[in-house]
Image (cartoon, helix red, strand yellow):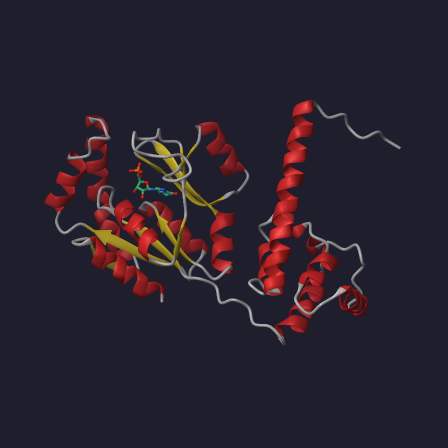
Amino acid sequence: MALPPRLTDEQRLKALEKAAASRKRRAYIKSELKSGSLVIDNILELSKTDEAVANMRVRELLESLSGVGKVRALTLMERLEISPTRRVKGLGRHQITQIRNEFMKSSHAISPGKLLVLSGPGGVGKSTVAKKLREVGDFWVSVSYTTRQPRSNEVNGRDYHFVSHEVFQTMINNGEFLEWAEFAGNRYGTTQDKVEQALLLGKNVLLEIEIAGAKQVKAHLPQSILVFLEPPSWEELVSRLEGRGTDDEVRRAQRLELAQAELDAASSFDVVLVNDEVEGVVQKLIELAS
Ligand code: 5GP
């Protein structure tokens, strides 16, 4: 028998970290199943994008459902001819349908949350609206990845995940992004897994992104609602962009030119809102998600 490959210390550490993260995720999924916050249908959906869920044993999963103990789980697996060691990712299409039918009779899936995509020209005030919405509305707001340098008032992990070009490229190669785009010389992207998880958990999700990315989201998830935020006037937008102390002159000029082109995109959005008053816009977004 071939010997297993020898790992370096670094590789061993990485493998241990990955295993610990998977264990934590599985424990979380099981507790959500027990409490009824998640139902089997949510898990079968999650397993398409979440490696830790895909690798869970079917038996573990069934036993975690409220009202299903070891005996019922095993009996059911025998009846459906699922081997006791089978993992979720190894389930056949027919078996998935049978499990769904078995449990959907007695439980109801959480209805998925709504996905609002807030877009519009740079400088129109999207991030102010998103911040306010996070404070007052029941929304999960996605934190994007970017290759841009942090501004002085920005915090890594809160405003953005600031990453190098190399890391961003690896994430593209790994298919981690729901959408990504280049804007004024930098890349920005939204990761897929967290957005899908939040929606499956029934949360309303807000993405605050530029226009090309918004269109990608619509192409992947047609149920998303694209909201275009317009400035009260062009003059107002110019003064907001010029007043930005955080960008240098070249960057401001680039952004103005871009903003002109971006304003033309409003017609391809589902909803257009004029940002004359932040509270009013936030209220309308809450209404759109209800
Ligand atoms: P800023 O550099 O001013 O923070 O953002 C520049 C532009 O990138 C803004 O229009 C902002 O909405 C957009 N943006 C932020 N995050 C993302 C993202 O994840 N994807 C896309 N496509 N655009 C984003």
